[in-house]
Length: 357
Image (cartoon, rainbow, N blue to C red; front, side, top):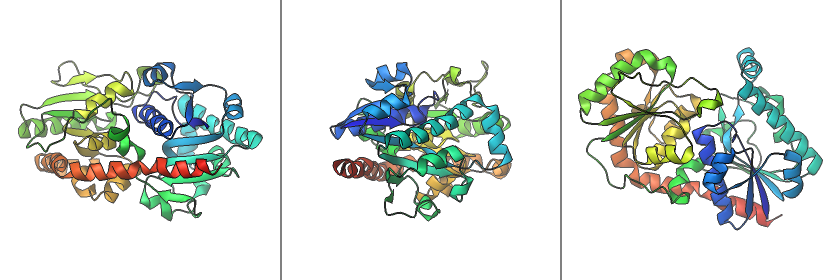
C-alpha cells in the first residue's frame, strides 16, 4: 500500500524532522511504501526517503494519508495567535498547507489517519484555525492516536476512533537502531549536559550555570540548537565565545539525535528535545516549557522534579533541583523501555486500519 506521510516537515526543526524519520520507518516495517510531503531534500537523502511536493499528485497516487505528529490541536483563536500567523511567514505558510490538504482531501476522498498528535493550550475545537478544522472535518478521518491522556477529555475526542498512545518519539530507540543508547546503566552524576534554552531565559542562565558547576565541576556542557539557521527562527539562546559551553548548531535530525543519545542530563523548554533525551536514558529538566510539556511531565509523574517555573527561579535551590532532575535517569531506564514499547502501538493500530481499506 502507498502511504503519504504529512506533517510539519518543512520547518527545519529537530522534533518534526525526527518524527518524519520515525513514522516512515514504522510504516515501512508494516510493509508499506512511504512518501513524505515537503521533507527537505537533505533530510530525505539522509533518511533514505522519497518525498512529494505536489499535494494533488501525492494524493492521486496514495492509498491513504498519515498525518504524523505535532500539536495539531493548537490554540489559534485569539488576537495574539492570529497576529502571529499573519506576521511570521513560516507560521502562515504552514497554516495554508492545512488549507491545501483539507481541500485536496475533499477532491480525492482518500482516508487520513492522525498519529501521535496533541493539543497545545486548547480547550475546544472552536479555538482551532479554520484551516485545521477543515482537515479534521474530513469524512475520511479514520484512526486518531493522541499523545496525551489529557486530550481524551477535550471536545474533539468523542469518537471511538480516538485512542491514547504515548508520544511516538518515545519509540525512537526501538525504531532508529542506527543510533544506539549510550545510557544503559544508571550514573552517579552526569558527565554530559546538553542545554537547549530560550532567549527569554537569558538572565537566568548565569545562576543555572553556577549551580551546574557547583554540583558537577567536571561535567562537559553543550548548547544544542534545534532549528536550521535558514528556518528563520531565532528564539534559541546560544553561548558567547567567552562562555565555557560548546555550541552545537543544528545540522539535521541525525546529528542532534546522536547528541541527545549521549547526554546524561538535558535542560530545555522543548517537548521533543526532552522526550528524546529521556527515551535514551538521560535526566530532563524543563525550564519554562509550554502547556504540552507540563501535561506530558504530569502524566509521567515527573512535573515536580523535572519542571521549573521561570517566575519562581530566584526562589529555588537550583543545586537541589538539578540533582533531582539528574537522578531521574537512574530511576527511569526501565520505565522508558516500557514507554518505548507502548509508543510502538501507533503502528499496530495503524496496521489494523490499513488492513481494513
